[in-house]
Amino acid sequence: MTHIYHVRKDGALGIAWKRFVISGADSKEIRAKWKAINTPYKWETLRVDRFPLCAGNDSS
Image (cartoon, rainbow, N blue to C red):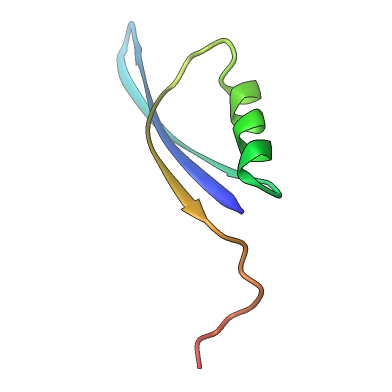
C-alpha cells in the first residue's frame, strides 16, 4: 500500500508545499512512518491519497 501525503508548512519565508510518498504493508505501518518523518510536528497534512498494492498490470 502507498500513501501520498500532500502537506504544507508556514514559515518565515512563506508557505512551503511538499509531497511525501510513503509505502508500507498496511495503513498502520504507513502512519508510523509518517509520524517519524513529521516529529516534531512540522507539516500540516492537506490531503492523503491511498493506493493499494498492485499485483500486476491489467491493461488488456
